[in-house]
Length: 321
Image 1 (cartoon, one colour):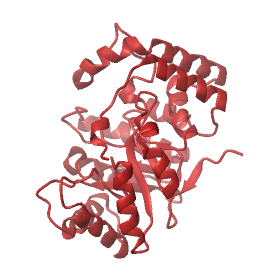
Image 2 (cartoon, rainbow, N blue to C red):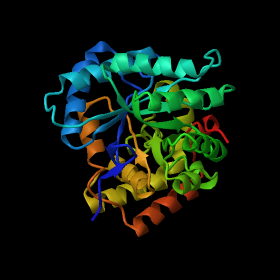
Image 3 (cartoon, rainbow, N blue to C red):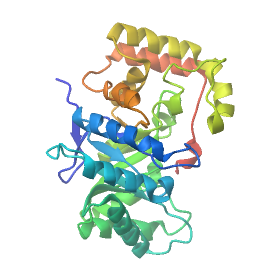
Image 4 (cartoon, rainbow, N blue to C red):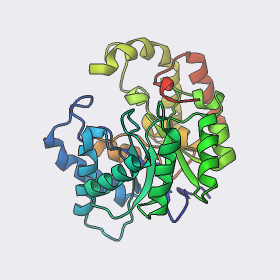
């Protein structure tokens, strides 16, 4: 029987699909407006009701606004018996020196979230220096009981091995590595990230699993995303016509949507996709990726179509070595 949940350690059980909240409060990239809040609250409520219990945020999303909104939505959610797990991330900016910066930032995030302890705390990306100090700070957050589990984001296989070894020496498990992964960004399959994560029992959280909307089936050469996504999308969309067709064929057979099939592909690969949500309709669509699983033949068809498209969409350069 297919299980919709997994344990990432220390009593943290999450659904095999989470929600990323970069757009919540971000005015620069996502053009957030306060008028969205009612819809975001409704989306949050719906998702938790449907068993989607993990929400990922970061201190830099909306410069703390995403954490504030998520904390508010959590407090205003009525079915208090539902357990919601929150993960956020520390930004290792070059001027942040020493382990104390990580601990202090973790406490600030907890304040914005309105929590005494969070489920998961991650380093947002490898630092240009100070990595060992950041790892020490992450460990201190765990040892002080501020967080139930710790992880990283955008770490390559060698970096993953190093922090895993450091944390293990302090009897702290490395729970997660959050990376960009989708049918249009499969570098983690070839660069060793997925393999290393499996060897170390580290859960992969897949961000941008719908390639910022390109894998939803709603775009074509005459209907492209606007804003910062438009230039890259213009070169990718014409190449993925056949991939979208395969997604649609499987979706029709399964009585699912294109987005649900693309998300379920990530789940079938052993990762936890964390798509974004800005509306109740998106929440309903994303939640439908749970409760079933693509078979091996369907995964192979999608793999082949993605490879033959020759298209990539993402920011793999953020992922270290």
